[in-house]
Amino acid sequence: MEEHKSASRNRRSFLWVLVLIAVVALWWFFRSGGTGGASVAQLDADRAAAFGIDRDEILVDLRDDVSDRVVADLEHELGIDLVLVSDQSYDERFFRARVDPSQQGEILAWLKKHPEVEIAEPDAEVYLSPIAPADASRINSDNQWEGYPNDPKYKYQWHMRQIGMPEAWKLADGKGVVVAVIDTGVAYEGHGNFHLVPDLDGVEFVHPYNFVRNNEHANDDHGHGTHVAGTIAQVTHNGIGVAGVARNVSIMPLKVLSANGSGSVGAIADAIRFAADNGAKVINMSLGGRFPSRVLQKAVQYAYDKGVTVVCAAGNESRGKVGYPAAYPGAIAVSATQFDESITFYSNYGKDIDIAAPGGNTRVDQNGDGMPDGVLQNTIALGDPTTDDYYPYMGTSMASPHVAGVAALIVGEGITEPEAVERILKDAAREPRDQEYDPNTYGAGIVEAEASVLKARSEGGGWQLFLGLLMAGAVVSSLRQRNLLGVRLGPTYLMGVLFGASGLFFLPHVDSALSSWPVIEMLTRGLPSWDMAVFGPAGHGNALFFSALIPFVLLAALYGVRWLRGPLAGLAIGVAAHLVFHAVVRLTDIQYVPDAIILDEIWLVLNAVICIGMARLALRRA
Image 1 (cartoon, helix red, strand yellow):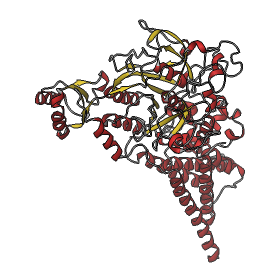
Image 2 (image 1 turned 60 degrees about the vertical axis):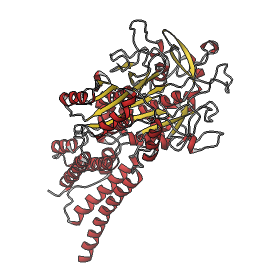
Image 3 (image 1 turned 30 degrees about the vertical axis):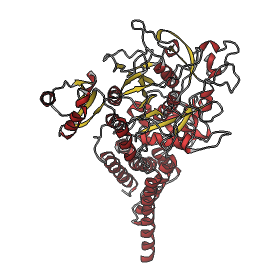
């Protein structure tokens, strides 16, 4: 008898040890590989090279809690005027000042020693690469595309097919996700001489801001930003023009570059913080320069820490070094491919490349469709906001929004943490066809939209179910060992575990079309993640769903129905597994839980323990 009890105890302990091993394995498998980007030594070296040149404007980033009195004292002490970079930079106490170039070094040295100053450095200009669009008149209006999508010029969008959009469009559209386009603005409204380009009519635009003119009209007077926004969110299957990657996202137009394609580092940093503070979940920056800035690096890190995926063009200088901000830790650096999937002649390359995407090459027509192989979108004529057409552009500027669009599709599947978004993008990327793969040019490979969406939809489902089954076995073994199991268990117990932990996570890989139906899609997730059906991706991670509340309510209401205790106990255990998985593998932020160290994890683990306790009570002999 004693031997039997000892064997039961050992079996029970063994199952809980397996649970612990599984949790450690989860952490190891999904552990952070860091935020990537240029090393500290490289950043410092590049800064030294950049800021040896005198400039007459400096950026001063003070502590956020600094009073106006302290600002006035600094101005008086140095004999300078500290002017807000924009009306949006008051809360972050971010200023620009004009200084005598001969005194710049002395002023910067004094500011850097001041306890209220976080960063003081020269401002710098950022320019778009001078790559002109191809002549729109070469677009042949005959033999246009028929099929899905029904946009007639989709025929010329080889770049959408290169990243697998025809299948991805059947799965996801990015609805509920806000993508900030930090660029020359977007032709998004009728205002003065500006007009909305026809193929963006229907896109939702939110929180526009012009950091060049310091107003709320972020209209494009260049063409570049509208082209970029079109790749991300051009209205698709509307019988007009061309298609976009994430056809139902909202665009946040943030103008930081003027009509000549130039702008200041200060404005860009300000725009990044603005985007992060106003609901953007993805930022696209198809801009950059050779040298880094501490204020820009801090802004990228700020956005990353707030759960924003930052996607940047690697640069068009054909050099073996990624430009900034693409090279910052926390940013995804994108190189450019052309039709034959080789890396383009202009694309930067190097160890900091994260992924590749179509950037186009308007000097060739490799597919023989009668049009240069650029990336085709509807935008204003170069420098003329009163007219528009369909222009093929080329550049890593055109590659970056393809990745930003796919990132938005991933976020739309409930994967909101930027580290997880980047991991999925890279894991789903593919090697080029008929080209030699080199990670210094392609990074993880060419972005693949369908594979990214499928991976996002089923991310961790198998692990969640495995954890749930281990926990379910451990709970039953523990009760049986003490002769306390009072409920007859059958397949419904395991079904409860399945729907609580992972849902039908495997279904998207079996039938992608069926799994896109709203109700079926909800059932492909574990119970806590059903909040996606209620709140959308912006509200994913709702603390009430990601808690013991729903199992508690169900058990409290239905405890008297004896035959339901088994499946409800299984559901509670499945929810516990789902919560533990999210505690170990950060896929989304838990809403309403303070953003402090490991508070999310404490919340999730505590509620998982409560779920297991409730399951034990439901299965115990009365």
